[in-house]
Length: 105
Image (cartoon, rainbow, N blue to C red; front, side, top):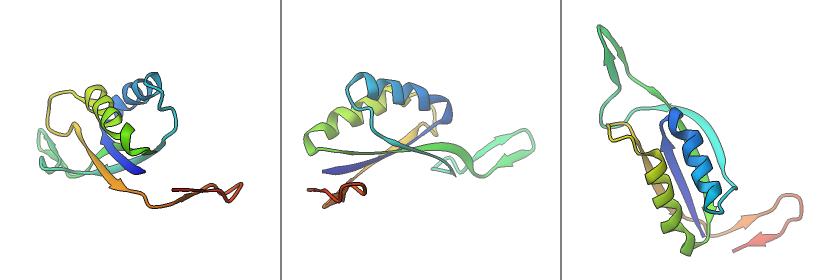
């Protein structure tokens, strides 16, 4: 299993969620976050915004599903400008369902 963490623009959140759902991946966790990437924020006139609002999407998926999920996220979140976001993939060694105690490997 893998954990996919995608940081996307807030205005693209709904597009990404709907695209994942359409491909059969409805389960995810969303969190509103703030951060900055290589662009180090944004300047609007004399005002510099150091950290920008983003949305963090987290999905745990089978290894074989990861390339499809990453591609769906990339396509749905793409605007073409700095700050489009990032996708991180990490291994998940174990998962437990709280209600039943069932372990998933």
